[in-house]
Image (cartoon, rainbow, N blue to C red; front, side):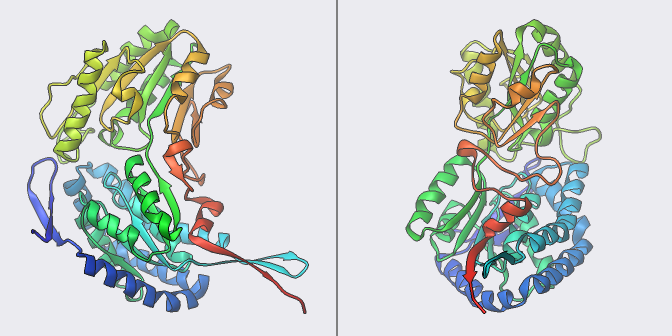
Length: 447
């Protein structure tokens, strides 16, 4: 058995490096070391932990250029997007730590009662490949700040960037407070089944269900964001150009490999033709290719399995009557050029599951009630968007999603990152999200 995990450039297939796959014994020992390190980390207190987190993230800035390069080569993101992710991660460590510091302050409620927020113990953090630093950072920082030690398993698709990031941080953090293990599904399952106290996960709905089942025996705490199949409703009085620009930008961002990408667009039949025409015009301006080529804004698909799944969704739609206005199903790895599909129906796979690729899928409606019903007809509920004027807020109120945007995207500012229905279990970000990484304790006392 090969005990090394190879990392390859999705654009070229070039081997970039390799890391050791954790054995069951490695994972057991790692968790044991984390548990041994937790008491001293807890005793530092919130202020002490924040001081070290700020110092560690500030020190990691020296590796910023290498992190950008690794994201470009290992994930396929272009330099601009990779730079934004790295800068946001390095800034986000101190920023999030300050939020957690405020959120976890003990509170006197009167009558001799005090609410405290104490560490849970060992946190398992399992993160995805599409935002290999940002998604991990949003879970690691609050877990550490709450006083937990962390065992981090990054995606098998992007092990090098995660490994380098952890090495940068561990120049400052105490030994074994933040550890990393590598591998595939087997290693993730072993970590979930190990004696950790909380599991923070971002990934697929199927993986999330498996984690819930495996965590049930220990009644382990869970914080999970489980993807989406985000709808967009374009009302008859919408600004057609603005709606079309958003639809294309959201559907194609990061080559469509984003949990809050717009996956299903429902447009009022009265404005469907000009809207669809404008979408095609805008999408045709996008260019697929390797990250280091000029004017490329759609990078490679992460692997051949994902590439094949996207094409399967397109072919399924064609078979069931959809029309392709741009792109198509005859595309070779590693790229899928921007594709625009119209006449999407509810029996198509892409209407039921997230395609996670650079596809703009459009369906027409005659009744707003029907558009809302179709938008909500999914087990997912991460994000949703409405474009329109007079009744846009009213329609938005009817959508079953954790995050809803009106004439704009979702998730901006200091709002929590939260999914409804099967798109989430718990949530992260903001005071209430950060508190999920801690154990609430109520202390009653009398003088």
